[in-house]
Image (tube, rainbow, N blue to C red):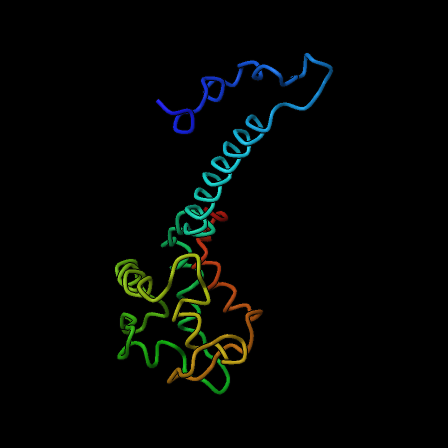
Length: 186
């Protein structure tokens, strides 16, 4: 066995004494031998390599690992649907186009001023497909009728109903998309 191919036993045992002729801490506080410094540097490099690998792995995960909020039916029925029926100066009501368009709203029963429970459930099931839970500005329901300058998309046949993100109706829709419930946030 050649000395250059195998490390002395002391390199495998952290508690080993320094080789003869090298003073350690007991010998007046002199510095340990260079072999021990090299061994420590190698250990440090390995530890840093592991930390870097872990950091790179974690950096690929989404910033938030929280689940997307659940869309609340009651909030949709009581807060969102009335927006679809509201008259706005210079614009048609949402129901005017969407009772025959896409995404569809259920036809109101003749003489009714709002939807019944069955119709509301059907509206909810369709309209929840046009939002990204937790992401109002990625949700077509909120970006289609929003002015382009405020973050809306290029076209909405019914016009741009909201000029800014501060519009109270837009805020209600955004609250639903963020998981707002009738009693507060889920």
